[in-house]
Length: 320
Image 1 (cartoon, rainbow, N blue to C red):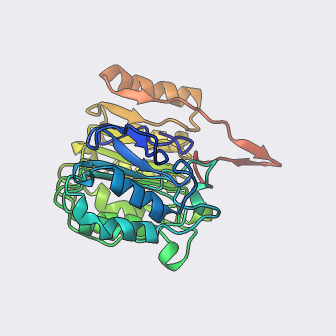
Image 2: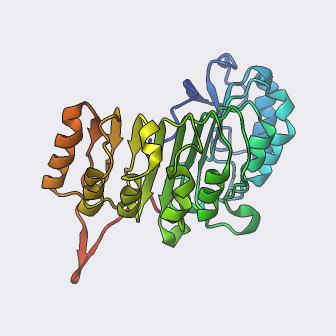
């Protein structure tokens, strides 16, 4: 999925956007991931969308929920939306997956999405297995994306999509106790849009042992992708992974060289490096070293640096 896309599936279920009232019949409550969207519902306030949803769909059977655009005329913060969900948590005993802010760039730039502290979601839904959040950190106070360290026994998938993921969130992820976590993806973004995470912030994740069930790690969309690659090259966590994603960022030959000189990666089933700045020779070396060993390597979307005066400019896939 790229930022230009809406969610198509969640928790293995096809996403179905709740239509305006009167557009029936609806699918069975547990057979789809329900997407709530103020625009699709007739441009009515989100509390009315929520009320329509809970009246028309048996909430006790809902397994997956996707929150799309929740504003009518202008962008607004996510907190009141979460308050509705959390207040009705008891009506959703089967909920296992939640994606917040399924919004495309045509609807709102990723850095303009006004989020909030998402910790209460994990605290209120102890059986949740998947949590995805899209948005940046341009908001202030309660409008800013944040997370507090928590212990959650069942969460298997955690995904933050951002053009600028706050270092505070990265540090909180590393401090969480998530014994069932299998997939972790962090779109780190750029400093201009609040992405101030450092390699040091990633140290608890890279050290291994923090998430014993982790099999997929994505550290993506970063302007320090070379530094991340160098850290990953010697990171203990790599030994337990089946797939690694270092895509969408400013990966150059220097970062790729660090990967080649580091620990063996041939145990990986997949290495995703798409949207990169590697030269032909380096790309061939990566493919020869890993592809020949059976690792699926994605080297698509090779980028060419922009030149301005005597300087080169490289860019991540998703920022604003």
